[in-house]
Amino acid sequence: MKTALIFSGQGSQYIGMNNIFVKNHIEIAQKFFDLSSQILRYDIEDVISNGPAEKLNNTKFTQPSIFIISAIAYEICKKKGIKADFYAGHSVGEITALYAAKSLTFKDALLFIQKRAEYMEIASKNNPGKMLAIINSRSEDIKSILQKDKTISIANINSSNQIILSGTAISIDKIIPFCKREKIKCIPLPVSGAFHCNLMKSASDSLLKTLNQLNLEDSMMPIYQNINALPESSNEKLRENLKKQIISTVKWKQTIDNMVKDKALKFIEVGPKKILTNLLKKSHPDITCLSFEELIQDE
Image (cartoon, rainbow, N blue to C red):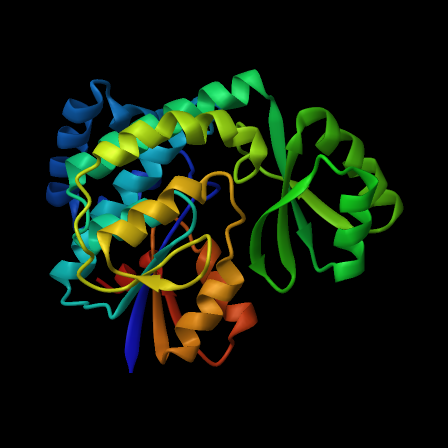
């Protein structure tokens, strides 16, 4: 039986998410918090512990916060003897996967995420946008939304019954009443911009220099990447796909389907919540999937 580790993305953050480490893993957690604050040059632990929510939900702070929590959780998984055959991460979680697969050092991964988040925040200010989850809808419903407003695009295909849309703030605000009239269930997401669409083009362009200079090694195990849902290990392919990631659709459903086809029968979500776990349990109820909290709850 093959095991896959999947790493959380934006939307999984919450104030006090560091408390999952308090009971038995405070020493390893504190080591990473102290190191992270030195690298970032501000007290990231305070942001994670105390927020406020508006600050934590700003992508500038969200991305490094989720990465740090997920990296600590991964180190605890290693300590528990968990070994993975495959890795994947949702959006910023893909960078955590690169760290776990020894393609990036912790410092390089965190500095890259800091730049990624800063450029995305600037793009969000220059092109204000929002994201909207569409739940339990038919493909015809998605088509009708995209036809209604051609500036809206598909950001994430998370599962057969959850699609995430990105668009300008005006476009998303206008489409919500349309969804309600058409009885299409929609949920606005707690993010500070419209990610994985062309509104992030300036951020993607700015990130190219950082990516080209990034010390990216071949990964220890295959990483199924967001833009094509395929396993990659070579640093050239990993780098090339990362260049397009923040302006491309996250093909998460296809990623999970491909991992299952490749004999992954046990999944562990490494991160602060169990968003990916819940998605997977609905789409593949016969597959074992645990969140990190479930993994450590009996300690």
